[in-house]
Length: 250
Image 1 (cartoon, rainbow, N blue to C red):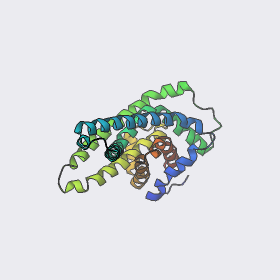
Image 2: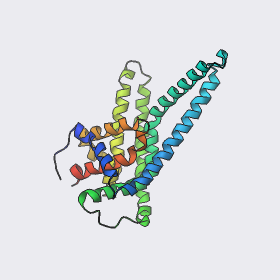
Image 3: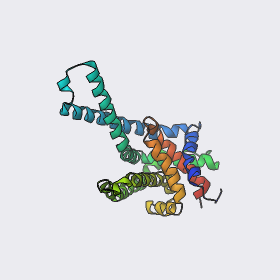
Image 4: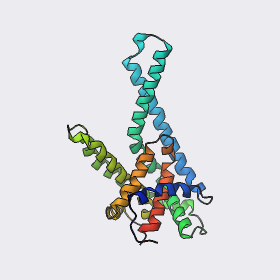
């Protein structure tokens, strides 16, 4: 294990490392449940946002006065998709955290098996369902603390969007907070498997801010790309675990 701290770009590259890891034959089966959770959550998000956007546009009756010409219908469809995409991008961060809340037990299991694979301990028996159930209180408690931390920090950042001049840099601050939050979210799985509480995860990553912002920025960008965001959760868990094994184990 190297003790040298990786830089911003090195840390960001661990998301690609995670993608390579989840495709390993011994790890694929542990990816299935996190992937299904993401498909369900983002599928529900896409359906709900599309339905809301359709109802909103219909209520405005923007195009009704122009009749049923095909070009009018095409324009309305394009506008509907644009509104849908903007809303999906805006809500991607929140829904990713919701997906992690639902998939926390399986993410913890995936992190454990990735670590075992990287350290050569993957010949040990996989954890049983009983072990998974026993880990639920710790994992759920950690996810609830993350959500509380998110709400406490994100409300002031959202309010900055309405302050003149300051709102010019508010989107940048919001992205940086998102990157920080994603780093905490996914590093919590390998660290939590070794008994670290969420408070201790924050303390650990504050000492390694380049690592946190590098890895978190890569996850944040990937989470805003349609279709790609369906695979982000298991890939980020694997990447964060590899980062932990290479640099954070003590």
